[in-house]
Length: 309
Image (cartoon, rainbow, N blue to C red; front, side, top):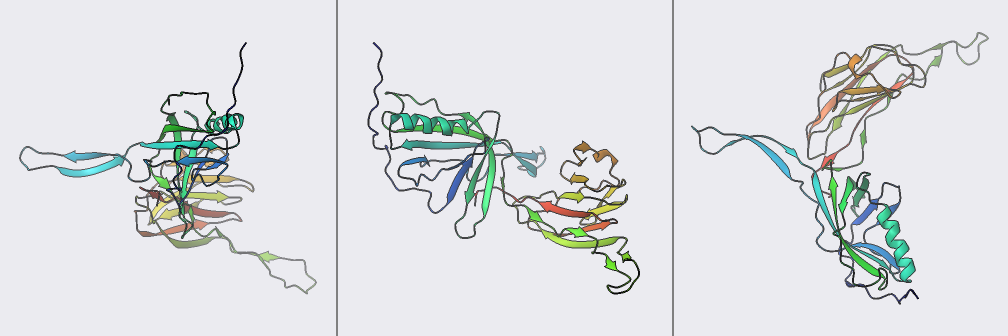
């Protein structure tokens, strides 16, 4: 007759203090559930063990040139390759075998081969958070010598991959440019009907600094009613919008891809001029806009870093 045995929870193989304090390390799965990877809850925890890889520089591919008439080589450029991440991980639940099985399955559900989640590291003093998107590659296929959950803990060697290998910081936004509020031309106490006069067009500029380890490309967001002929620029390189926007419209322009979408529809081929330019790492450049209408435009960049801190 078949039967099941549920044993008392055992002691985790590693009782050492959290090696990651005071960093706040979290995982947000594709399903939106957020997990602490610091293992601070004594009853149940997901804890990264020593030996994690993926916090710092990604692999790169160098482009060099050589000549038989010259010594050595000349560096031309490089590109960052996909980042492999290694998580030696302990899953612990100190209540019982059935509870451990449910806890382990719940965490495993957050990992998918084709659906990325977000690995984040928050620095304690500054509060700065950097994140990278990861997909699962495998769990190391650990050997099991007893019923899973019998001891109340299990260890894995998860391998994941970041298709986009750089750590991203919080977006940096320019001012939100719009025309000034209209003014009642007739005054507040006269008998005439209200008549508002507002500026017909505006040209503004601001500086944006890129704190990244690499150059980044701004994204421009246009909202609501704007006349045809709106224009933005990055360090003098211009992008023109030759069509009008109506109330409720949303236009986004990515200078990295050269693409644009108006309410989800592709319109990048209509932009004129199309002079796309990144903001170099560590540099400050001028962002300019010229608009007419009651809508608004704003520029944003997402800083990118080689490391999690």
